[in-house]
Structure formats: C-alpha cells, structure tokens
Image 1 (cartoon, rainbow, N blue to C red):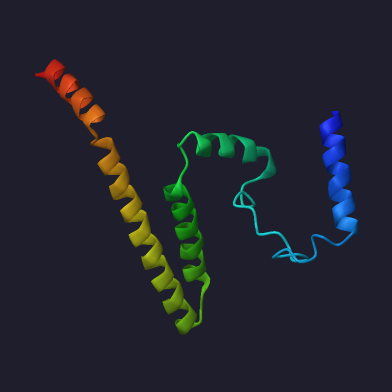
Image 2: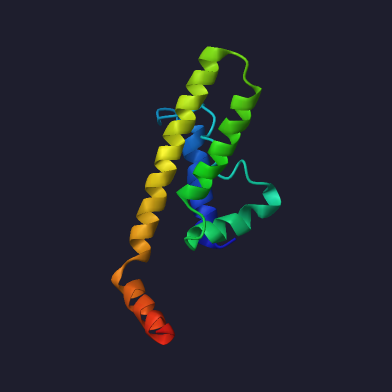
Length: 124
C-alpha cells in the first residue's frame, strides 16, 4: 500500500470510531442487492465486460425476468396471484418491445443506412 492509501484508511477508521458515519442515510441497513447477484460468480466478470461493451442490456434482463414470471405463472394456483403475475408479464413484454423498437431505430441510423445501401448496390 502506498502512503496515501494508509492515510486515507486511518482517517476512515478514526471517523468511524468517532461516529461520524452514524447519521448517513442507510447506516446499519443491508446494502442494496447487486445487479449481478443472479449471475454465477465465475461468469460475473465476463457479464460485466459484455454489459459495459453494450452487448448485454435491458433486453437481456427483461427476457430473464419474463422467463422467471412465466415459470411462476405455470406453478401458481391462486387465481388472484396468477392474474397479478400475468399483468406483470404483460408489463415486462411491453417494456421489452419498446426496448427492441429503440434498438431497431438505432440500427437505422445514417451510418448503417449508408452501409446497407453499399451492400444492396453490390447485389443489384
């Protein structure tokens, strides 16, 4: 460790012992669940790299949620709860279709249009 890390760590320890962190929002409560908690430990780094590169996004998350809800609907016996799950599934499907429509719009950007035109000219 370098000198600055040691100094910072010492200041944090001192502040904690003096109770300066006691008034922070969320003090003493569990940390929020990590978005990668459902991803197996050995795949988390690869998942994070793919997500940061833009290959995994909201659409993948929504697909996973829809599969989970679908499994719950199949197992559910309570009609009220089943109706709630079906409503939740419909909301997720609508959101998924919106995300996919935005993706289509992105693929029709001017850069892709010119590239598409070049490819089409090759085949004509």
